[in-house]
Image 1: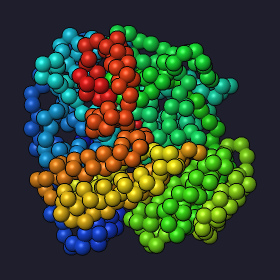
Image 2 (image 1 turned 90 degrees about the vertical axis):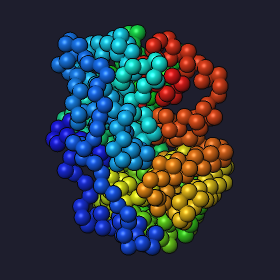
Image 3 (image 1 turned 60 degrees about the vertical axis):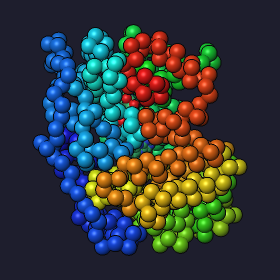
Image 4 (image 1 turned 135 degrees about the vertical axis):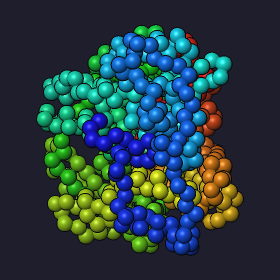
Length: 532
Ligand SMILES: Cc1cc2nc3c(=O)[nH]c(=O)nc-3n(C[C@H](O)[C@H](O)[C@H](O)COP(=O)(O)OP(=O)(O)OC[C@H]3O[C@@H](n4cnc5c(N)ncnc54)[C@H](O)[C@@H]3O)c2cc1C
């Protein structure tokens, strides 16, 4: 990480945020939505105003060079970036702040922190960029078992260690942030091309640990497919899997750790499959009379085997909220990319699929169509929106997102049930009509990954309860309609109740067995994925 330090409350670095003009646009949309001129806005406490408990443990001299109990470090590692995280930080609730934050520089130092945490009975939370939106990085102690909480921030493991241009893969350290990773690959002519919305402030190890979903709307959707092999530091030793393009040798050890959310070990390094930088691009924005027309076109594109790099559809309200359209049409943001061949034929066939479902392309200049029109406006809003929560929450607004995946045969039913349940819950919880919108982030031949956003006018003093009531109703509806509790945001602690319903009981038992073997003291991320 270079430049100013990360905010302890909010998105990005200190001093960064939305411009006055951007804030005016976002707040203007909310004023219109809730027919109000002013919001009841409260002040967020500054770093010096926070009261943090005295650290319950102190690192020994051998660990002192890379450990700290500094106020900033503890505050900045208390929460991730979920809505309830923002609310509790806004209220100055830092009860779960870690006692110690360690910044190991190599695997030996990770092991040393694990040994010490085990000896003093501390829980240990692996921390990448801290962009978790499901309660994945909040340190927890269970009063009997853990006497303190230590957070392990991996930012010093930040190198691309080796590039294999023949097989097109690179060995990359787990704490490498997105921009640094791409900058280090650039001189070699390669890219990982994994761009989650949180790309700038999240890390390779975090992406692998959460099975993150990146830039590609189809084919290479999750980080999973780019992982060639892994090195993992566990409390009982280090393991490394073999570099292979594929293997049928039993259950995949990589797959055990991909998505393990810091509960089984720390991903210190991974060989990742690379791609050439794209030199051919084709893009378009397509308007549809309704969201379901757009969804049918997406299905046609996905089942035609076209694999667009982007095929997001926005429902009319979502398109309006980002400024990409006037609210009368659903929008498809369509793009193809290749480092090898022109894409005009692919685009032409995709537009035929759209035309079959009443889709009309917006006119755009050919060369940079992917940055123009509704697609370009949506893309800008997409990159800037993470900065909005830090001022919307103090204004008493509840804005959050949740995502799922579902087979095509059940998609329309799930969409209608989830939207209705969430809208009803907003009204019940706040007494004010809210708004629920939907877009697709990823698509598959057998179904889409719908991504819902909701907006509610909350009440200070009740924001957490109001949010939880809405979240519960939405999650119940997702699981009830056959979806997954998360397509790429991970489980953490917030999604545990629904993850537990979704996963087979025997699989849960097998996972607990793996945990007992690799983390016998149960120090790693207690409560995430598995009960402490
Ligand atoms: C504005 C915003 C946009 C987002 N957009 C996306 C998106 O487009 N796609 C998507 O998939 N997610 C998205 N997320 C969620 C989040 O960014 C991802 O889950 C991301 O993969 C987390 O990476 P991180 O480095 O920040 O990990 P952290 O948040 O630090 O950690 C996440 C989990 O992984 C564990 N962990 C972290 N590093 C390691 C490691 N090296 N070894 C073992 N365990 C580890 C932690 O203990 C924790 O359980 C978004 C979040 C925000 C706030």
